[in-house]
Structures are given as structure tokens and as C-alpha cells.
Amino acid sequence: VQLVESGGGLVQAGGSLRLSCAASGSTFSINAMGWYRQAPGKQREVVAGITSGGGSTNYADSVKGRFTISRDNAKNTMYLQMNSLKPEDTAVYYCTADVHGSFRRYWGQGTHVTVSS
Image 1 (cartoon, one colour):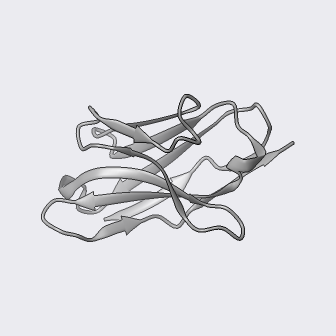
Image 2 (image 1 turned 180 degrees about the vertical axis):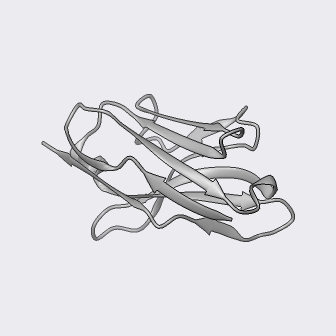
């Protein structure tokens, strides 16, 4: 499974961005997916997760009510809609995919999000 993120960039505080994560390869094996982020000088943290069918989602407290995770399995793509962005949301955002029958987690290369104040 290969994952490629896109949609990052520079935005002012209060603005919005939508990140995409395109999956390729053995996409039929993908189960849950998620988004993580790592801010400069900080540990990587989970942002949001979504089950295989998209029926269940979860969010870090810091992004609840502002971010929305979704996926379109027909397009093998996951999204993260980010609204009301804050400077503390500045980070490299990574998408992940878990596969059926394996403990391995696949990671994308990351996309940079910078929120200016």
C-alpha cells in the first residue's frame, strides 16, 4: 500500500484547508485509516481516525468540532477537512492505513500545514 498526501500549505488563522490522502497498491486490504501530525519540536500525535466503511470516526480533543475526517473508498482517498485553523495546528500531517490481517501500519510522506497568526 502506498499513501500520498496533498493539500497542505500556508493559511491564515481562522482559515480552512482540505488534506487528501490517495492510496494505491493493495487498496482492497485497507482497513482503518487515520491522520497524525507532528509539530516542530514535538512528538507525533494522532489527529483523527476512521473505520473501513467510514461509519465511525474519532478525533483528538484539540481538533474536535473543527476537523472532519472522511473517506471515499471508490476513489481510494481519505480526506481531512480542517476549519477554524489555529497557529498551533501548524505541523506536518501524515495519513496512515492499517490493513486486514496485519499489524503493520502504512504511512504517507507527509504534507506541511502552516497557520499564520
